[in-house]
Length: 172
Image 1 (cartoon, rainbow, N blue to C red):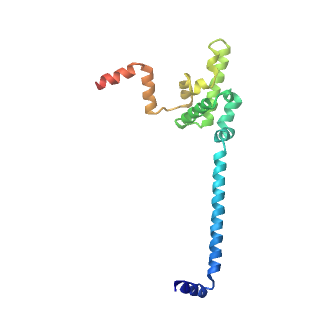
Image 2: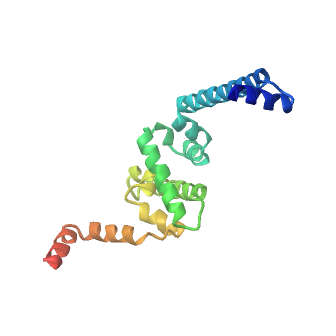
């Protein structure tokens, strides 16, 4: 009875059950093709080594590779340099590219000074200005403004063991 009513309604609208079924199969097939394409695309994205891709298109990486021994470093060290540049750029008025240029410039000036016998040549590497003991020189040169937490950490490091004893004593 319900099937007769449905066929009657379909005839009134100018179609029949077979046309509706064929149309629905086309819609489902199109959806299956789209889903398959999405899955293949996601697999392709997953297969890409994004670290290699990123290092290939990064202006900072190419600048550091051209002017320093950045390419000889392992990935972890290169990533530390990039992170330091990003952090300093965020807390100064300079772009990441300008921060990297300034670090290279300072390392170059240090290298010139070192050839005159005024210091050890180990400090001419750009890493000493990005993540090493001469970072404060770079920060001052670019107008870096440390966060409160960074300032507190630096104070604790500077005062050494007293940084542990004094808070414990004060809390006790």
